[in-house]
Amino acid sequence: MTITTLERPVSLWPAAHAADARRPRSLQTKIGASDTVCARRAGYLLHGRTPTDTGEKRKAILGTYLHAGMLEAAREEYGWIIERRVEDDTIRGHIDAVQLDSRTAARLPKRLRPRLPAEETTVEDIKTKSTYQWDNILRYGASDAEVRQVLLYADLLRTEGFADIDGQRQLARLGPLPVGRIRFRFINRDSGDDHVQEMPFNAERARGARWWVAQVRAAETPEDLPRTFPGPGLSVVCDNCPFKTACWGPTIAGQRPQSMLIHDDAERERALAEYVEVSEQMKPLKDRLKVLRAQLDGSEPGVYGDNVLTWSGGNPTKVDDIDAMVAIFQRAGLPVPMAPDVAAMKAQLKAAGIPVPVRLDHERRTAVSINVAALKKP
Ligand code: SF4
Image (cartoon, rainbow, N blue to C red):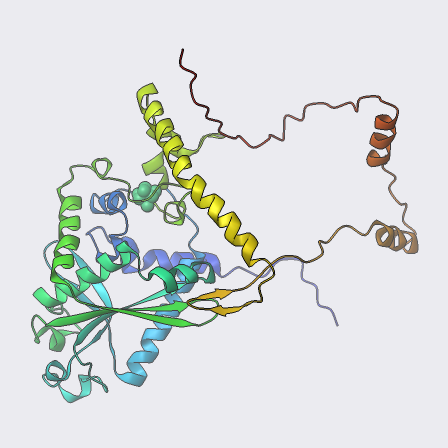
């Protein structure tokens, strides 16, 4: 039996967005390690600016739920120390997981000790990613911003220890800890695949991350800070940034936000010269890619060295089956709409040598292409 309802069932997303907005991280105005993705954005947060954009947060919310579920399972099953606060006077954050070495673990009361101590104290961060991002993760690992975030957590743990707050007093009593390693655990949101990337804790790189934070703190206004990403339409970080409009101004139809970065002809000249230079550098690479693509044509899918070859496309395309539609209408006793046969009329006009009449459609525009030619010098 088919059940029909007049109203659509209520969506869960408004509830999920409201709950997400109440999360401590969303209300944070002091700089958090997880806010160190973009210098300008960290500046907006630090100066307590009101977000200008709500952005699309559904994927991020799903990531948060998955993240919380995985960590909770690791705590229950392996006794992991999860979601613990670290801070000093300038920065704070929540470390996803800390694996203590056996000597440090032995200093904790038995009920708080992890079941499997680590070889060396390790600060671990879980990142959920989509399939779309997965190849980049396998090839290049964590981004600079992700490494910076975890280095800050690790450095806070190394210099301050766990924060002395309710719920983690015993951990705080351990004092500063000798962090030996940081680890990323990437989880593919679509397939469940996971990938681990580890690196030794590097005090020099941690100093670099601290310096980055110091620059953000030293800026008088957020506008004095550089934009770490290239802007809406070119970066998903910017597309989903809560300060997108504050950073790039309101959307102007037919104009890309980045065009605000060019103020006069001198800047236009420089950008154009760089555009030509980059195009010249890319040309031999594009030509080589075409040759390699042609050589690989017809190769069987499979694993070749470090790369996996697959093919997509090559399937018949779907077109409207007009005969089937007419048959359905006729069976239902409905009149079949009759439209002029445009293709036949065009063919007949062309055969008769009469130009096909056209008119301008101002609602639809052709794509705007940039054309740059060398100036002929006298
Ligand atoms: S819009 Fe992009 S560049 Fe601007 S603050 Fe946000 S993330 Fe940074």
